[in-house]
Length: 376
Ligand code: 3PG
Ligand code: MG
Image (cartoon, rainbow, N blue to C red; front, side, top):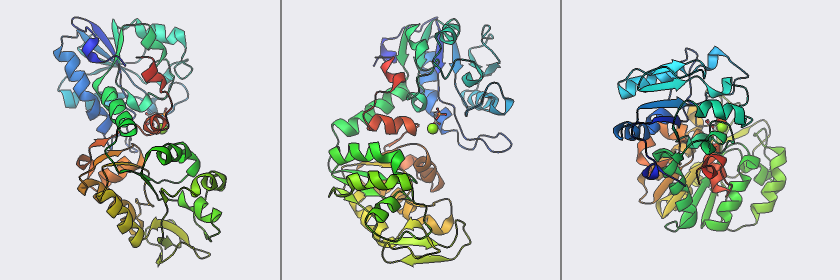
């Protein structure tokens, strides 16, 4: 993959694809600016190397056509604050405004973006002299701003994209052992590719979250009213026999999916009728924490339970704390696990917190990311 080390930017206009797909509240205030912060090293490096202008491309949400609810204005403003410069937002592609740093409005407002249309890529390319992709979180998308445009200008990966790819490839290719994968979340079908990849490479794979219920169902346990993905039962059966795979041995259950519900600790994994398993139990949390403490490398993706509800947060918190405390190299996939780490104030206590959810999982699964391939 080509990097900034080989790209001449002095005096040039640089088109930079960033992933500023940040969470916003109802007032359109950014609730977590980690992705904007993560792009700063590349933007600062380009400026210090004498780039004449930075023209930023980014997406926000999944709008169908132009829709002001999905405007990148909050992201442009936040970037301006962080860099201490005025960041203008260009509503369309008819020539970027003046200014050291300008941002083009949400690329998903433009016809052809998600279809990787060459005509749109030409219009992006006309805005600058060289192209830098630093949007790791969108690198699994073959879109005009992440793929087609990379072929039209001298192009390279930014520092964030470079670091994400080398860190994630590193844990697959040459991990310090034991390599432990902690995989949670709601659905087995979302994670089966990752499970298979780690069952080949890791020493231990720890499972948590609602995705354990298809496994329990396949083993003949009662799952009660737990969230149990039906389509997940077959894939669960496929990998279940592997001795590296560890499942919870106790659970915390609730009557309903809310914080002020009746709560019960289950000393095994059969869930009674009318109850739903919402977290791993204390015994499992302790066992998983011990495994993490003894690891050389840990990869974590997906919460252990409904951590957003206080009575069911302990399992995810135990894993987050074990990740923070271990001597191991710790890598966390984006999305919910990143949100959990942030909730517990531990985001800066891991070796690498990925800015990509889907992108990091696809990379681990061994898929080629279109945004990366285009720079190789
Ligand atoms: C993300 O937030 O997962 C990335 O920015 C990609 O967004 P997308 O899933 O809408 O393509
Ligand atoms: Mg996504």
